[in-house]
Structures are given as structure tokens and as C-alpha cells.
Picture: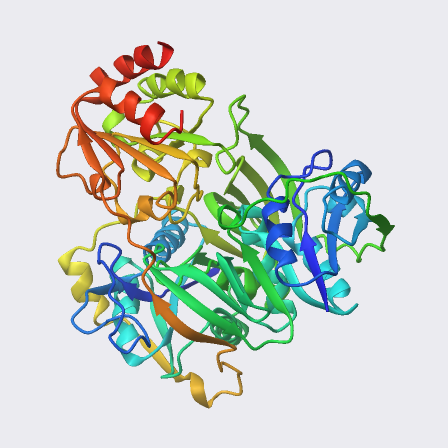
Length: 249
Length: 312
């Protein structure tokens, strides 16, 4: 069995983002970039299945500019077998990305796609579900547990009111939540080895896939700033303020 | 010019998450339909029909809608859109987040996630980068498929209406996915999303046992209990309590953060609360930068004292 893992390059989770002075986007120059944390969990999940013997090959794929090769190398250094870069300079939105991934999947015929549930930049939480829709495949979103059998995958999902387990016919799309696993650290020998692993580069703009964005960003702004208040000396002070100043209890 | 709202329910009770979505929908237009799809769920349709401001309820009952799986609901919704629907809306709960991208892709349109403001019928504001950048987005697709951040819209509270309930045909069963089991966290406390007071614990609590200190105060205040990712990851409390960028988003009247340092991912889920209290022994913790009232102290000392002071 083959697993395909789409990965995205995002600004590092610990960076305080700044809006560009012309308001067209956020500052990315000299900002630390890396693999989206949910995508990293997805790679780890695929590798654990491979190590358990259920899977022969793990392919990482990304859609974007050539600089995105670094997140493929990250996946390869974790242990993925090969990478595919669907290269384009076009700015992308989830449906466009899902269409490009659909093309890759039709070419590679994996039995399972494991994707991150959302990227920490656009916070959309859409691409996996859209991909499943385009392929007509079942979807198991926000997974905290994945068990694979010959023709099904059992997915335990984290939902607002607890946990929900589904059984999906393969092929299927699964998206990862935080508690699925803890991704491994990259060792230096594995980083070196990853440099020699193959990456196919395909020009996504030349394919007949509509990736033109439908959503137009008119404005980016910071939310209203919340100012810190006062430090109190005691619990009595706190209860007094909550009762008599804020009047919330 | 119709608006279609997808109801979240368990075949018996309509989720309150529909109320802020109706409120958002009334800003977009007057012709508002709520779709209730499930099994033996006429009661839910009646509850939906009582919400003021809506025009009608569509009721689709079939065995394959019992668990409201996205694979089965999406084709049903797509069929309805052909009846002249311009906006399809759902709460941005895990239900809406699972379903709506599938609907959008089947309609060949991009989806708008987690909107907080309606600027016009095609322009919306939504949070990105863990709520640190608000994006105003115009949607050029013919149909707008939207999930609504429920804390950003005042729920419609009047429920004395009796809109028409119309039964509609189910779409054929796909049968590619099957519900196995659900573990519902039972609690007598108010729901995190709608609670007036939320008290949350973080890594500082140290273990699951210590969360009981929060429970006592939660009971005194009628509060819901939340948690930071660190506390959930460490197994102190179950996942459905996680507040933050990728968990639940809350905006109560009072939010009390106990032993939570205040990573941006956590702030994303609670910084719209009206009054924020932070209790942490680290004076440098970032949570103090947004707290209205801060107490630099050992939480194990403070929590019993707080409980005593509240009972006075």
C-alpha cells in the first residue's frame, strides 16, 4: 500500500506575524518558515504505519514555489521515500490545492491520503475535505487514532463533544489532529540521507487545472489590541474587583 | 436569493450553535431555510421551526443521515442549492468544519471558514494566523459556503415562531463510511461555547487530580471548564475541553486562566472574552499582557482561597 501525505510550508508557529506596510500580505522576508505542524503529524502517522509493516511507500507532496522543496526535504528526512513538488508561482487557495492534489493522486493511486487538519497560517481547515469530495472518497477528519486493515481504515475523531469513531472504505482521506502522535526529531544522518532522495518537480501551472483564486483578500488588519490590566495583591482584591468593578460574578 | 442553514443535532435536540448562525443569516437576507437531516428527527425540525426570523424548515429523514456523516449530507445539500440558494451556512463547530468544505468542493467554489463579521453579501471578515491577522475577503463564487464563528454573533433568542416544515427527499446512500461509536463527554456544567463563565487550567496544574480544584470553583460560578493544549496533551482532561486556535473558541463574560502561560495558540481561543483573569506564579507569563486582572501567585494556594472567598 502507498500513502500520500500533502505538506505545506508555513511561517513558524512561534513567530508573531506582521502585516506588510502595503497591507497585501504578511511579512515573510527573513521570517523562519517550516513544515506546518499538522502536516508533520501526518508524515509521522504515515511513517508509523510503514514501520508497522502495513505500508510500502510514503510519498510527500507539496504545491507551491520552488522554495517549498525544503518542507519536502523535511518529510524525507523524517523517513518518507520520495517527494513531489507541484511547482507554481500562483497564489493558492484550498480548492485549487485540492485540484492539484487530485491530479497527483490519479497519477500515483495511493490507498490513503493523510493530511494535516489545518495550516496555521490561513487556518482554513478545508483542503483534506475538499480533496475527498473531488475524489468521491470518504473522509476521517481531526483524527486522534488511525487503524488500517486490508480494505478499511478506522478513524477516531476529536469532536466538540468528545470522540467519534468511523470506519471508512479505502481509498480514503484522513486529516490529523494534535494528539495523533508526536513527530520524531530529525537526525543529522537522516537529513544528509534525505538530500539524495528523489523529488519529482512538475510544473502545476502548465497542467489544465483551474487554480485561479476565487477569494479576493481586500484588507488585512490586526484585531483590536487588548491592553493588560492591573496586577492584584490578593484573592480578596480579585473577588472584590470581579463583584464590584467588572460586575461579572 | 435564499440562505440555507445546516442544523447540527443528535436526532433529538437541536444544537444551540444554530442560533448565532441564524443571527448572522438575518444580516444577509430574509429568505432563510434551516435544513434538518437525520433519522426520526421531526422533533428537531419543530425546534428549528420555532426560531424567529427563519422562513421554513426542510426535513430530510433517512437511515443514512442518522449520524450526519459528511459523505452522506454533502450530496443532499448540493441538491438543495439548485433551488436558488446563494448562501449555505453552518456553525464552525467540528460538525461544520467537517462538512462544509466537502459541500463547497462539490459546488466548485472556495469555502469561507469561521467568519466573524458580515461586510456585505459577498464580503466577510475572518481570522487568520491564530486570530492575529483579520482578513476581509470577497468571495466571487456564485454560491457562498460559510462556517460562522458562533461567539461573534449574538444568538437569536426569541423562539415563539412556527415556521412551515417541509419534508424533502433524501439523496441516495453513498455507503463509503460507517459510524462505529461515539464517546460523548457527559457533564452537568454549561457548554463551553455558551457558558457565561469559563475557568481553564494549564500545565501549571500538574496533574489530572488538580483539575478538581477548578471543578469546585466552576460549580460555585456556574462555569464551564476549559484547558490549554498542554493540559490536554498531558492527559489531565479530555480533548473536548481544549480552548485555542485549533480547539474551541470561547468568548464568555468572564474567563479565568489558571496556570496557563498564554501561548498565542491559546489566546486565539479566548482573547475575545469580556473580562480575563490570569492566575500564574510566573510574573513574565504572556497571559498577563491581555488579562484585565492578574494575580501572580501559586495556584495551589489561590484556588482554595478563591473558593472560600466566593462562598462568602
